[in-house]
Amino acid sequence: MFAVDVAAYAVMSNHYHQVVKLSPDEVEPWSMDEVLARWCSFYEALLSCMTYVDLNPIRAAMAETPETSQHTSIKERIHPTFDFAEAIARQTEQQALNEFSVPLKPLLGFEGVIRSGVQRGILFSFGDYLELVDCTGRISRSDKRGAIDEKALPILERLNLDPERWCHRGTAFEDSYQDYRNPCRRRRAA
Image (cartoon, rainbow, N blue to C red; front, side, top):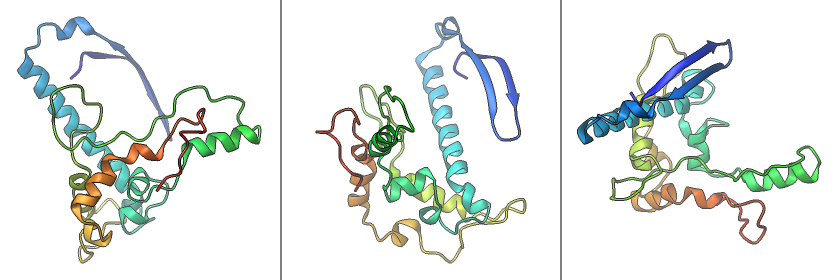
């Protein structure tokens, strides 16, 4: 799909290994339409994978809804509570971590719309993603123990959020994460 060759892989019981090699020469003959088609299929696959991961606790009957599923990116996006910079500072103070010199990165953000120029986030709105997760989570599967109750209110109603306010929160998520090396910029999550 993206001029990447798989050199080796191993699927283990609880993780996997994969070695890939980029092949930039393969992309030279691609037309703009081919590149666009590849990016569109990439974003479809990305949303499918994200939905699968965010629904995992529900499918395993460990949670009833995305907003109540512990230790998931969707819950952190809905109710930001984890302050990565503070956790790094606390671990360093306790000498449980010697050094953390790489820049902090938040969860990949939602762009909402396609614009001209560089876009680094997910080309989908966060509200639409919540609705996608909610609808997908209501589908019962015979091979899974759990699903979102079909009688449950839609997710935005359960969260009592108006779409305009929610759109702002979803696009400003990265403000919850600041550079831990600069205490002046450090902020707590909302």
